[in-house]
Length: 269
Ligand code: CA
Image 1 (cartoon, helix red, strand yellow):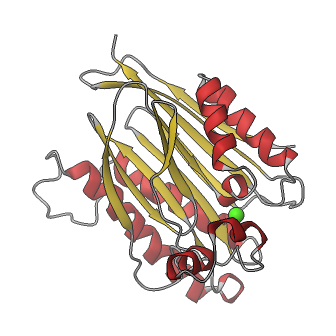
Image 2: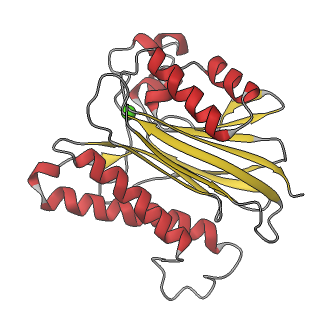
Image 3: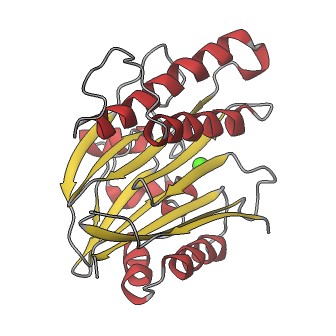
């Protein structure tokens, strides 16, 4: 089983209100040969992303990688779509750059999909977290998710852009029927499909002791929220927690690519 692993632990950063320890990993699962998921863990800038690509002829891998690269570059290097923006070093510039990276990825993936017939319809989900002082910007498109564990309680911070979730919201489908819903993999929004994309955004507060978990549907489609909560409660180390979550998804069938990023927040020493 091939793992692509990134880990950064940097407690020595100046003036950050919370210490961040984080780890991410992806696994092809037990059925699919290719892995179209992507992720990044950049604790030094507080950026965490999971992307789940789609499209034939390896286009899904390309789309998820383009998304991760564009968001990472936008946040890390200050690459911005507003070159004349004088507030680029202001306190709001991080979240702006974060969003700008998603929109830039959308335009580039869409353009590539149109230019290359084999990549037509390529796209990717996006789940991203940008940790600021004592809060985080959470953004998403599609059915990759962000959870927060606080005081032992797991809370879903995103609402899937999926056909199943739309049906649940309409009252046509019960939440317990999603697992057996034949079109549970159909998403209603993705980065790169259209010329522009709507990104859901929220800001949540963060405290020492909180954990954040980002994942693709290969994890949350196989592993129930109660099991996810049990792992995050009982396994303090992000690396061990990620490994345990991926192992659970594979134990439950591993029918899709599995990606998880776990972020732990603690008071600075
Ligand atoms: Ca998937």
